[in-house]
Amino acid sequence: MVKFLDIKKITESFEPEISETVQRVVRSGWYLQGEENRKFESRYSEYIGVSHMVGCANGLDALTLILRAYIEMGRICPGDEVIVPANTYIATILSITENGLTPVLVEPDADTLQIDFAKLKAAVTDNTKAVMIVHLYGKCAYSDELGAYCRDNGLLLIEDNAQAHGCLYKGRRTGSLGDAAAHSFYPGKNLGALGDGGAVTTCDEELAFTVRRLANYGSDKKYIFDSIGKNSRLDEVQAAVLSLKLKRLDKDNERRRCVARKYVDGINNPLIRIPKGIKDINDSNVYHLFPIMCEQRDSLCRHLEKHGIQTIIHYPIPPHKQKCYEGKELLKISGNLEVTEAIHEKELSLPMSPVMTEEEVQRVIDALNSFSIY
Image (cartoon, rainbow, N blue to C red; front, side, top):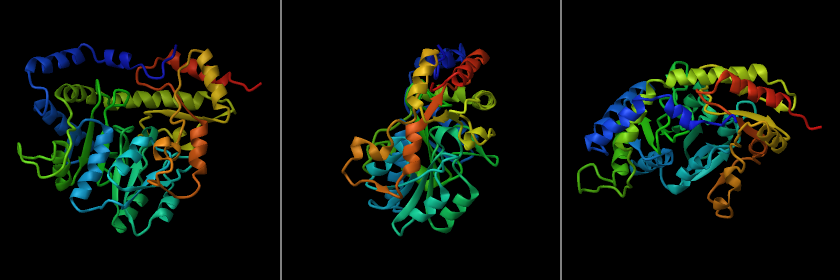
């Protein structure tokens, strides 16, 4: 069996250091808001290239806290519009509606699978106050043109960097390109913890201070609550594990690119399309996922399963068709979302990890090339 992602094998590749790290923290007797968090916040902010990093409980909280902080600071107000790609994971959308803001869903480009800049501009109204880009699949969604447009029009630019740890854009890390960024350290991410975890990165001191206060019940001084906050903190064990794994992140990402290169060079089945943006292998993609498109996706899934290949669909139902938003008029849709729906109907993610063997990669390629509809 070629697993989609062998998290156990990844964890074992850090032994014995990872077990020693966990034991050290357990024996310290300090499990929240301690030295391990301070160390990781310092190391990760330096790695990303920002002046502030605030650890929190998970990636969704990170996104939600950014928007909540901007509301607290008076930069945006409930009811304002936030432009977001229509083909993202639902967490991106949830963070917006959770804050009483209106997500404006914009189509992606069919080749890059990232938000279509021309359609983004067309969706801007007087009520638009922010743009939330998503570095989906591990590919950078930022461009100089987009950054300049947001600055010139007074729009906040927020990055959902949950899938792109270590990704570069002209020498700068994703997570440092906009006004603020949210990160997820879910175990399956390129930089994954042994449980949930998240972070906010920014160069805005006021935003970082506000996020930290909101994540700590709304308090920056013990038993004094200036805001209606929540409890969202990164624990010491996860911070220590992430500090350890951060040292190898760039090497692991390069291995992911090696796997991607073999897929691009080896897959030659005309029934399978590799999006153009995925074929372009460079530092602007850390290949959290390797998506392919196939008109006969369900048949392809069954074929691969018979050959012992695990795959996952990202994602079978687009956010605008999820029951949680059905009939509630919480979303604003720009256009007819034909491209988004086509992606959700055809997308299939292949096994991808830094611990895949050459034999496993070749098994995936051979199984894909043997697929037929006859």
